[in-house]
Image (tube, rainbow, N blue to C red; front, side, top):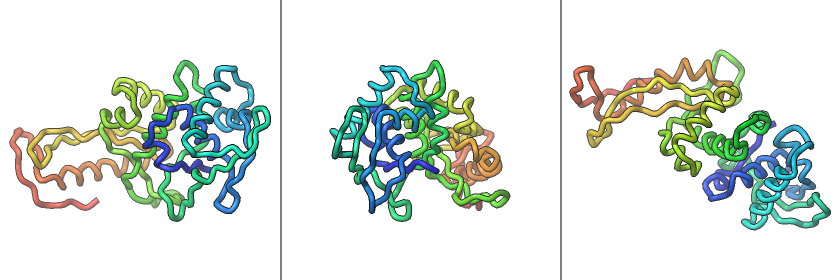
Length: 250
């Protein structure tokens, strides 16, 4: 089972609590023919943590995120009884065959929410944002059964910080936590090059899912080599800038 999120949810200014509730609600099975679900605060806690034992402030955070989704029209309350709801969440439904989506593993969500000493809501939001940028394909693995291409992100850390509305130093910390938790894999080998305008730069890290680590190690060097030689200019060891015309295959 996977969590399918609409990219629009991530591109808005929704809070980290609302993003968490989006993941919890998408944990439920629902389709276009049956957009009405029964849900509750206990269910959200279970979807996120695997437990229904939680502190009052955690419940308050969940309700804050849920009310934000209601206020922004992502879900509609049909009936409420204490901490339970019957909802119409048609705006959140995705048809994977036709719609764009961000794919999240619910086990990764639970791993994050069971970490100690970290801001779990903010960390989850960053992970979801990072996952939404994993759009670069490194191909379909042939040495193991795989139903999808391996997708990675190759965006600069400063840009990821802007997308997730946090600081660059914070995402460095988040990356470390996600790496140590075996949720993401960061390939840190880089290529020096220049833009078409002649501005020097170094390619960013490559971010992928930890499960794809071995394949990323195989394909990332070829990807970076192709990216370097597809530029109009490239660095030489002498520091001179030379014009390049050839394209190298993957």
